[in-house]
Length: 56
Image (cartoon, rainbow, N blue to C red; front, side, top):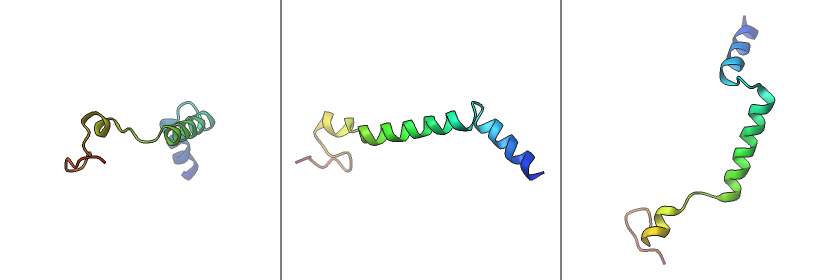
């Protein structure tokens, strides 16, 4: 019964399979680390995104 539940979870959450899904996850994580967080709000207005504090 336990294996059937694991099988259903894998089929429902990872329809392309485990290896391609995990590979895409790794690519997204490494791409996010390479680009860093989006910083468009603070660069466009010149103020800090929290409480409107001026950037140095």
